[in-house]
Image 1 (spheres, rainbow, N blue to C red):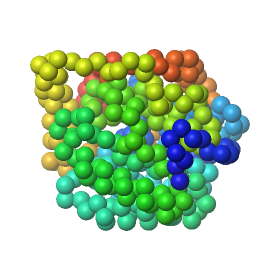
Image 2 (image 1 turned 30 degrees about the vertical axis):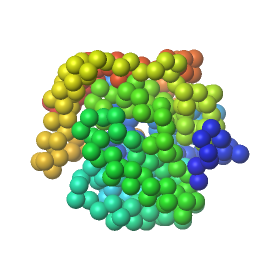
Image 3 (image 1 turned 180 degrees about the horizontal axis):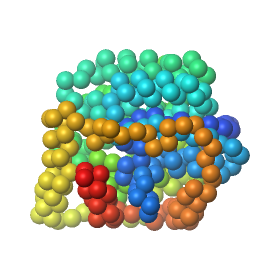
Length: 304
């Protein structure tokens, strides 16, 4: 189980291989590198391990838009074939947002998948849902996300899995941890999640403040009229296209393949410059507005 906040695992485990399964959060949206690639918490965690473990191997099978049946279908089967030491799982978010999805049935499917991983001797880290109370429109899903997250905590306990409770992490209830689309973490948010997982596994990336108190100042609060204007802009640019895809039964991940489909050795210096910058400036996280033009441009290219 997840140790109390701020506690580290008593004894770090030397993981030699890691597979990440899930949807857009695990794929890395919206942690965009200068090369135009999505990085994310899973890549950051793998890079952290590879820096101290020779021959460390990593695969990321996550694809944006994937639902539970995909994650605990082809992604799970491929993971079991790899037989890694560690697996992180973030699944169910795209199902929970569908009002007709039965959360009890969804949780049962989730538990079946986790038990298969645990029966194979794999250490599993589950990521819960996050609090959407601060996000206009999406706050209507808050109750469903909370219920499903409670299911995940119980599943973690029953299966002797670890869980990172994103809901309880106050640093993630801050706009500075989020992309301009308010649906995905930005670089700061992914860095916070990676640091929390590493800390829990007994291999911290740095001081606890990296994930518990990443900012020295409170978030900027805009006047009401500016907030309304920003909310309308967000709805027009990000929410409406998202709802339209759902209504048409389409996904942003249609036709996409995993970015790292094989369990292969990870070079420890893959993002060495960025990692060094992150470590040197734990409180230098950016706000949700930074890199908006670059992120929007990337999405425009993807739509084309």
